[in-house]
Length: 512
Ligand SMILES: Cc1cc2nc3c(=O)[nH]c(=O)nc-3n(C[C@H](O)[C@H](O)[C@H](O)COP(=O)(O)OP(=O)(O)OC[C@H]3O[C@@H](n4cnc5c(N)ncnc54)[C@H](O)[C@@H]3O)c2cc1C
Image (cartoon, rainbow, N blue to C red; front, top):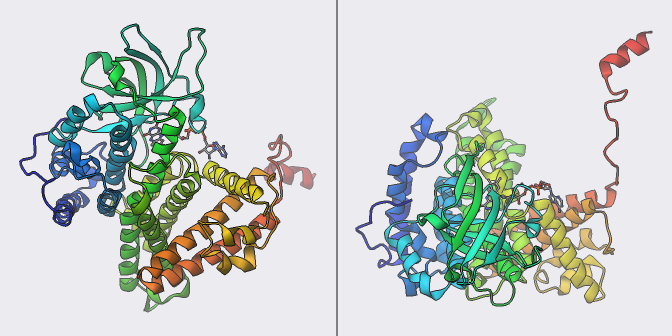
C-alpha cells in the first residue's frame, strides 16, 4: 500500500513522545470505530484509517538508524506492539508481521545495495512487508515446502510455487518468499532460502488467486498466492551459515517478541473485566465479591504479569545483533504460553461479561476469534510444546540427570524457580514417551522457566504482589498438569464409532 507522505518527522522525536502521540492517535481512531457496528466486521482497515495509523510511522521503530529508522531496539518494538494490542489485536498483528517477519530479517540478512531504498519506502511511502512460508500441503512441516527456485546465467532467480495464509495477502508491497533450490537433476535441496520480492515490479508481482473469508482478524487479508517471479541476485537474503539457521533465527526472534503483541490485550481484558465485575450487581452484590469471580480475575491479572516478564526478558536479548537460531527452548516457551494466555483471557472476559460479551462490539467474543490463530501460526502450540520437551529431555540426557526437579534446579533457565515446584516435579523422566505426555511435560517445563523469569523481574523491583499471585497460579497449573501427566492413558480413537452408537436405535432394541 502507498499512502501520502507524513509531514512530521516522527523518527526525530524522543521515543516517549513518539509513543504517546501514537497511542493518542489510535485511541481516538478505535473509539470512533467502536461506535460503528459495520466497522467491526468490515474487511481490512479503510484507507482513511490506515493513513492515520501509518502517518505516525509506527514501523520506524524496527528500522535500523543507519537507514533513517528509530534503531530497531526490541524494547521500543515491543512497546509499540503493546500499544497497538491494547486497542486492537489485528492492528498489533499487522505491525508484528511487518516488524518480525519482514523488517528484522531483511535488516539482518538483506543485501546492502537494496536496503536503503526499500527502508526508505517503508518510512516515506508507508510501505509494508510480510513473509511467505506456508503452502497448502506444507504448513506445520514447512521445511518440506515445494516452492523452488533456479538460478539463471545472469544470476537472477526464478521462483515458482503456491503459498497460502500469508498475513497482508494482496496488501503488502514487499515479501520474503521461502523456497528450496531445484538442482540440475530436478531434486529439491534440503536447505531453505529467502528472497525479497517487490510487488510493484511486474516480474516480481505475486498473483493472489483467492482471498480467504477468514473468521476473526477481519482487518488482515489472507489468501492463496501463486508464485512465478524473477528476482535479481541482490534479492536473495545472505545467511551467515545455512538458510534453515537463518529461518530459525527469524522465527525464534518473532516468537520471543510475541509477548509484545499480547500484553496490551491482556491488560485491556484485565481492566474491562475488573471494571465490569465492580459495577455489575447480581443477587444484591457486585460480581467482584463472588469467590469464583475473584479466581478468574486473578487468572487475568497473572496472565498480565507472566506476559510482562516475557517482554522484560525479550527486551534484553532479541535484537538483530544476536543469533537466536539455538534459542528454541525460550522461543517455544514464550510463543506457546503467551498465545494460550491470550485465548484464556478472551474466554474469561467473555464469560464474565455474560450476554454482553457476545455482542459484536464486545472485546470478549471478538478477541476469542482474533487471538485463536496465535495458537496455530508460527508453529501450532502442541507441536511447540513437544519440541520444547524434546530439547529439554536431550539436555537432561546429556547432563545424565533424568530427574526433572534435580535438572531444573541446576538448569540456567529455571534454577531460580525449580524449588517452588518440588512437590510436583520430583519425577524421573524417560526420553521416549507418548506425544500426549510430552506436550504436558513441555508445558510444565515452560511454566517453570517462566516462574524463573518472574522471580528475576520481581528482584529488579516489579510489583511483588503481582509476582506472588502469578507464581501461585503457575504452581497450581504445574500441579494440575503433573496430575494429568501421571494419570494420562493412551486410549485411541474408536474405529467404526458409528456402529451400535445410536441411543435412539438402542431404545428400539431394548424395548423389543
Ligand atoms: C490467521 C493465520 C495467519 C497466518 N499467517 C501466516 C503468515 O503470515 N505467513 C505464512 O507463511 N503462514 C501463515 N499462516 C499459516 C500457519 O503458519 C499454518 O496454518 C500453520 O503452520 C499450520 O499449518 P496447516 O494450516 O497446514 O495445518 P497442519 O499442518 O495440517 O496442522 C493442523 C493441526 O495439526 C496439529 N499438528 C500439526 N503438526 C503437529 C505435530 N507435529 N504434533 C502435534 N500436533 C500437530 C496442530 O494442532 C495443527 O494446528 C497463518 C495461518 C493463520 C490461520
